[in-house]
Length: 466
Image (cartoon, rainbow, N blue to C red; front, side, top):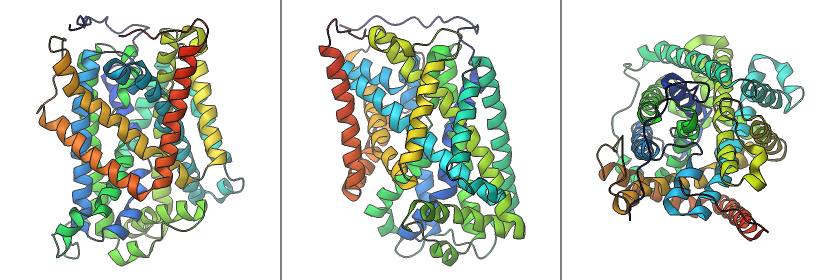
């Protein structure tokens, strides 16, 4: 029997719902635009040495992200509550699945990307001032602590700061694109298909490269984590998800076209992102952006690019620090006896949850390498997103009478595209990176163990279905 439709008559913005469209849009854009777009080209050119194939790769990544955003938009409009995959997967498939998704969100979804972005921030900052590399890890740690402290204050203050930082990031990236626009029409740019491109498009290397592109696009679903604090959530969040994802897709295509246009392929191939050691890997990744900066802005180009990305990464860290703790807070609502200390007070910042997330990010920062952190993220988040997209189809079949203020455009084709591409990517990645698969399975086991412990504890709590 279908569940009763939740009320969509939500209150206008007040102290309990301080987040409007522009903040939700800023959360999506800032979560998406991080180090990935400036770094993953280093990996792609070695596996796919064709500008045409690389642009197809980024286009496909954007299309898949938009298909995923459409699926999430329908579900969050019908089931408006914070918590992201924890709430959605728990509602769709049962409480144990939701709990595992919550653990994945807290670790691979937010803490690990915060650590990765902070490491990259320090590396770029070192190009501006050598003092940043004098004490490795200090600048990265300071960025996490400072932004966590900001978001421990009033929610409205953190939200406004996020909008300002995201606007600055968009202006900087737009400036980079405009600076390279004249190169896009140059005769030396080989964006046309070449012999052998068809084989590359169906290769395993293309699938694995899509993982790196998906990492760059990760964050298109970020606004769903703050649903309970969003005004008119069933209308605002779908618009923010789609507008933010479309904006970033366009920017990503233009940025990569500029990089490919201004840096010769032989120079791109000369960069070795697979250098052993963490610092070597980070430097290898960042070299592509610095090569582009030198081509666009001369001798000081690296400093210009360094400043652009370092400022942009602060916005990325801030957005994740803002959204991530809402997962823990939502879990605390369902398990008040054991997790109640993480609960969010309406209209106030989740201070304890922010501190816990920052501590976990710092732990990863000081104990794991950049490569390990990046590899850890992809499989888990892709698997959760696939289950959510499949949930749109499942919920329409199981609860056809459920009120759906927003209906997924192109259904069932768009969620099917996301499921097919995401599943293809997951299989190839698991085969190519067994260590990442092992870490992913260990995290799932940890989540199941946590659920089992809660379920068997004296006076065990039972999360309500919402």
